[in-house]
Length: 234
Image (cartoon, rainbow, N blue to C red; front, side, top):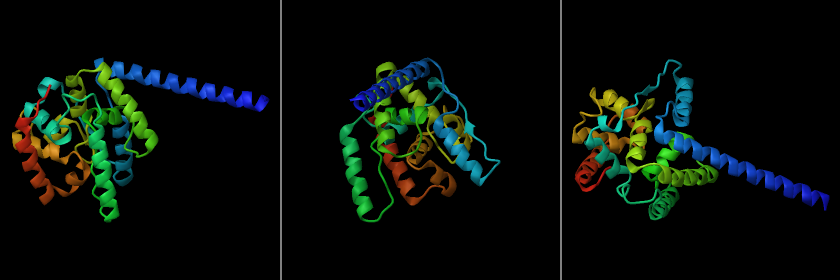
């Protein structure tokens, strides 16, 4: 009886600690609705890995307000990553199921290519609060954060955050740094083709940074560019 009471007490403490942790995360979501982030956990992890290969590697990251990022890049990113961004509540379960089935087929065939089912909001949750690690626990926390973000933030703020913290190269983060890195221009002056290329790179930015445009990427750029005029952005 004493052991049972002790275990029940531990479980209650664990539940309370978990609840307080989620409350703390919610407070951070509210904070980022009004304050721009600095270095994110994903940036930190990326730079630690980069420094193991090259101790002189530097982070390329410049925060840029939403109205200083051209509409072309906003359209390209939404067309490529999350065409239903304006309408969904943060998570598209059908897209997650389709991605899971696709990845299962690829694994069965011995292929390494994978498809993500994450929305832009989910990617903001991961980039701002979590890491690139893969586990069911991390994914569960990502889903909780996604609903928090959608509850607190406007679609414009969510897209602004995404465009600024997304990884676009080995150590390049954010639209402004990406525009400078690849095209020697600003995020406001990207052409439709340039914007489509940056959007098409998002699933594997470090690879394309190191290897340049592949035949697959060039084909994908054309697809994204054709879809850009069909999507709505905040």
